[in-house]
Length: 253
Image 1 (cartoon, rainbow, N blue to C red):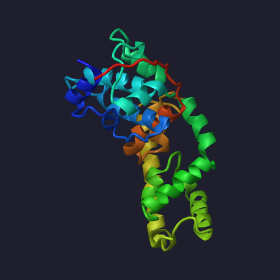
Image 2 (cartoon, rainbow, N blue to C red):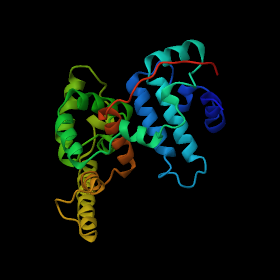
Image 3 (tube, helix red, strand yellow):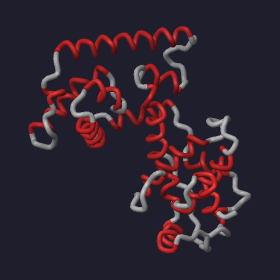
């Protein structure tokens, strides 16, 4: 069974872009990020209850091998075909090793280095303003979603938003401009409570300040953001990991 037939059987569509939830116009970075997120959901270690997890994971690896190769992608876009005999689609290839080559494990130091690079960067400003517009100025939600942020960062982030409002870059939403002092105090109290809960959890687990557990560090810094944990790592891994190999043959469906 060919790749396109496998996609139809396992993902209910033979369109490679639809499997990843993206469009034909997606950039290389968007394809990479989407591949990571979709493959993470069906990774055999993370989806033990899915009897088709291993097969789905392998098919996604083949799919990415096609779309990440400029020549193969061009042929697929123009003719709707892929090369089933190319080295990149070899049946003997270990797709788990391929995936890990593309997305090496993120370490504690990687997170620390990323935070240093990200804070006060143009990228942080862009992301912050997008969140501001998306959530119409609700700082409770914005501070929950912003990367590498904490309650201590609120004044700095608020200044960035105010500057963007003054220069006409974004709209002045009442939820932000007219936020009550009561709501701000409640947010600070909630952050303090979450910080204490994280510290207590650390003590219960017997972990010290220098513990190398990535999960512990993230929970300490983002105690209220476990819903964004996988997304945070996904963006880091998809954005900063190495690129895989190339191949360049083709065949019909």
